[in-house]
Amino acid sequence: MKIICISDTHNKHEELLLPEGDCLVHAGDFTDSGTKKETRNFLEWFSSTPYVHKILIAGNHDFYLQKKAHKIDQIIPSTIHYLEDSGVTLDTINFWGSPYTPGDNTWAFTKDRGRPISQHWNKIPENTNVLITHSPPFGIMDELDNKTMIGCKNLTERLSELNISYHIFGHVHNDYGLVKTEKTIYINSSSLDGSYRPINRPIAITHR
Image (cartoon, rainbow, N blue to C red; front, top):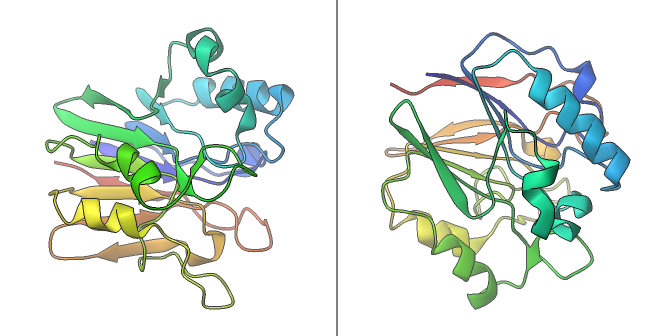
């Protein structure tokens, strides 16, 4: 399966040049202010993209989905797999998605570090092949311009217990790219750079 990875489009999704593939994954922050209008505009575009499979998680800007969690089935088109501490199996590949990032309640889908956010990471099943989170793990493509690393240490701890083939995330715009380790390929798929320009190309990976 050829998986196309994007994230942090912040209302500029229509400016992307999407390559061919089988599955399109968006790792959160598809809106900027998290309004209903922004959300509906993005979902209409995302659902119309020419991919057999479409997987979406929310990010810390996507307030509307957090606010309307009880009506999520009425909001998300049936052509989209929306993951919120949940998973889907497509062509024998197990995907799992979670929108949470460390932080206070200023933003959407944020949890305090330690036990509050670990409760979400502990839900990641052991048979997960492709993990999609909005937050990066600590120390992997999570560095701001001032050299501060804002990834989640609790996520890193959980990953050490798992055998994830691919981990797709975003959140830190200026650390876009791909890093390979012995057991996992990490993908920061932020589509916008630190100046909110849509210059980062979608990253394609192939899961066999």
